[in-house]
Image (cartoon, rainbow, N blue to C red; front, side, top):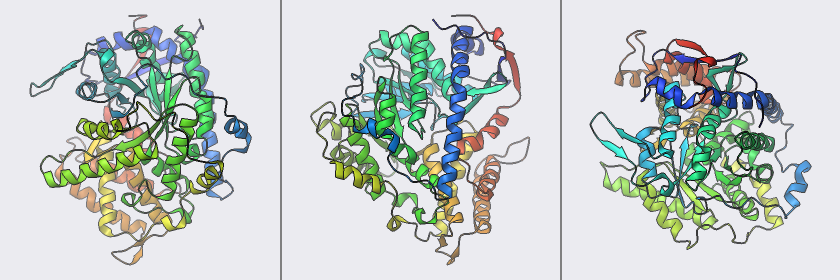
Length: 570
């Protein structure tokens, strides 16, 4: 067994006003044992240097994109990986053969129960885009999963409504956990006077406490990996998996991981990403909203790539269709799942006609995914399970992995050329109403995130960080690249956006209570943050990074505790 360093120079900064669902001492005794802390501290000390180097590589590539010297293409140095037809992914993990319908959501106690009671195949519990990473949310989320995996989860809300599992966890939908991405840090745990990697923090606590129990119930420790931009970032995860399995003395290859292809650079490295994770891979997923966000962000300095308003970017748009086609072909040639994207729609209970129209769109979208060759798809609400099931059950198979690819080598060359947006997809003039609607979505999401809610129903869609990111980057792109305001016939300017943000901020502030201490609303805070972002020379890489410091402020003052304060083991 590896011998980790001691817990010297390790401390936790805990909010004084922590009000988790369970007693704080119980939470600490269950999760933050010294043994668990030694494990995640070992991972951080061993791998954080590589993480920082890879993030620096992202910045270097972005500079090349901005000055026009970077060429998006399949990597020449890894052509041998792509041309070698002999390597495949591993045997499909227990509980992952059929993934027709995957439901996703944050690890909130009642939502976990509802998801595990749904008629779906798998449940992706999310510590990333749909979770605001307050200390309470993170700890409660880990406790909730710990309890669910041991069939000890139940819940009673303030109205007296009770929630409990209908079946034992071993026969419930297979659990898949998504940690935060490489770009995030966790300020509540300091190692050697620096915040720990949020990816390692989320993964480490969950894996350390639950991997053996998940194997015992006939499943396994399964993960979704977000926001990667280079195949070496996948290699870093693979190295962490190997060290983690060795540390806890379980066989290498027990872990399975599905990678979300949700960045433009990753689209050109799909096979390399699978290759790096080939002992642990369970496929790729089309993270459509983050992919659109990444495409806008990566190309934001290049006016010819100004994309239209997000509602006009469909999966039939040329660059999106190429991305989907390549993902499915890549996965199936390597024997792993190719998962479809999110249906973010939620039922409209007070308007049956409109609800029927919305559900018809969901059916059409899922049918398109099935016809393209996807093995399953995502939903955000249990009410969509029957729709997704009906579509994907019609394939008559548990998956489509072994159906021969219809893409020739010439076809792959064409796809490579189509992965970038074409000029005909460029942005047309936008109206004041469209700009204001975009601003409203961003402000509503930012305000909810700072209040601890990362999954927000807005305009009958379940908005998370990915969809809010698209709106934020589009505002910046319209401003940067001189898009016309159709209502005024003039270029969109910072002065115009400032005026519209102030109008929307005032409108939203009147609908919500003021903060008693500061006499300001949360929307005034986020309105100022949005203006600061739009005024900057370069757009911030991530909305969650932009907001994180303010989120910590909203938690209140912190108590610093040495790691030695926590129990040595359960």
